[in-house]
Amino acid sequence: MFEPTILEDLLIMKKVMIQDMPKHIGETVKIGAWLANKRSSGKIAFLQLRDGSGFVQGVVVKEEVGEEVFATAKGLTQETSMYITGEVKADERSSFGCELVVTGIEVLHAATDFPITPKEHGPEFLMDNRHLWLRSRKQHAVMKIRNEIIRATYEFFNQNGFTKMDPPILTGSAPEGTSELFHTKYFDEDAYLSQSGQLYMEAAAMALGKVFSFGPTFRAEKSKTRRHLIEFWMIEPEMAFVEFEENLEVQEQYVAHIVQSVLANCKLDLERLGRDTSTLENIKAPFPRISYDDAIKLLHEQGFDDIEWGDDFGAPHETAIANSFDKPVFITCYPVGIKPFYMQPHPERDDVVLCADLIAPEGYGEIIGGSERIHDYELLKARLEEHNLSLDAYAWYLELRKQGSVPHSGFGLGLERTVAWISGTEHIRETIPFPRLLNRLYP
Ligand code: 4AD
Image (tube, rainbow, N blue to C red; front, side):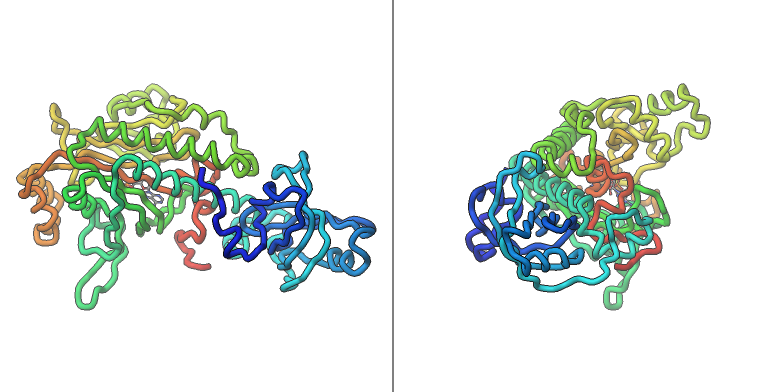
C-alpha cells in the first residue's frame, strides 16, 4: 500500500490528519476537524471528530481543560468546524487504535441545523441532501472503497504493460446501439455523449498494443433499478493480438486483483459497512464459465418459463445464474441477435458470438461486458449494413481493418456496480459521489 501522506509535513502545515494519528502516540498534535457526533455529561465530553481522512474520538475532561474549553466542547453542534489540539493516546478499544485527549478548541464555523442527523432518513431525503450526506461514515467508507478500486485498477494495468488512453466524450457514432444516446449539438453537427470508448480504444490498441481507458459514460436508459445510473464510470481495456479466451483470463485476474486490494487496504471501511468478507476472500482466478445455451437450460431447470433461447437475461435470471456459483461467473457466447454489431462470430456456429458478460455473486448483476472484435473488413462492413449504421460515420473504424488488422479483444467494467458488489451496497446510487438517475439531476 502507498504511504498515505507525503503531505503531512508540508501542505497540512503541521496539522496532523486523523489517519496518521497512530504514528503520533504520546505527542501533542493539532487537527482540523468537523464534529460528527457528541456525548457529554457534567464532567466529560466525547467528541466524534472527522477530517475526511478518518474518524477519531476526542475526549474533553472538564478538570483538565477548565471551564471555558469545556463549555465550548459542550456547546458544539454537529458539523461545526474547528482546529483542535490534544495529546494522542493509544486506545485499544477504538478501531483506529488511538484517541485524542483534547487540550484546546478553536471553532472556525458553528454549523446550524445539520439535516443529516444520526436518525434514519428515507432515500429521497438523503438524495436531496447528497452534498451533505457524503459526510456520513457509511458514505465515507463507500467512497474509500471506490477510490481503492480505482487505485488498484491503475496498478493492475500499469504493472501489466497497458497504456492509459483517453477516448473522446463528445462523439459522432454509437457503439452500443442508438436508442440510449444523449443527443447534443456540436456547432452545426449532431453529436452524442459517449456511451463507451470502445471503438476509439480499438484504434488505440492498434497503435499502443495494450491500452485502457477510465472515464464517464452516458446512457439515456429509462431504467429505474438499483443497478442503473444514467452517468457511470467505465474501465475499458483493449488488447491487440488477444483472442476470446485470453480476454477472459485478463478479466478474472483484474477482478481478483481489485477485490484482494480492497480486502487488504480497506479493512476498516468494510467493517464499518458490515460487509461479510468471507465471500470476497474466495475471489481468485479462475472464475467459472457457463455458455449462454447452458445458462438457458439451467434457468429452465430452475423453473423459469419466462425466457427462451434468443432472449436477453433480466436481473432475476442473472441472479439465479450467479447463485449457482460462489465466484463471479462468465456467461459466454450469446446469440448474435442480442449483441452489438462488432462482435466476432463463433468459429463453429453462426448463431452466437465470442462475447462474455461477467456476473457478480450475491445478486449484484453484470459487472463486465466484453468480446473479441470482428477484424475482417468485409464481415464488419456487412454487420454495419445489417444494423443500418452509416458507413460514412464508421469509415475510420472500418479502415482499421484495412491496415494490418489483427485479432483483438477488450471489455468494459462498470465501476459503480463493482463498488456496489465489493462494498455490499444495495443500491448503485450510493456508489458515486453525485448520482445521475432517472428524474434526478440535482445536487
Ligand atoms: O455491457 P456494456 O454495455 O459494454 C460496453 O459498453 C462495451 N462497449 C464495453 C467494451 O467492451 N469496451 O457495459 C459494460 C459495463 C456493464 O457490464 C455494467 O457493469 C456497466 O458497464 N453498465 C452500467 N453501469 C451502471 N449503469 C448503467 N446504466 C450501466 N450500463 C452498463
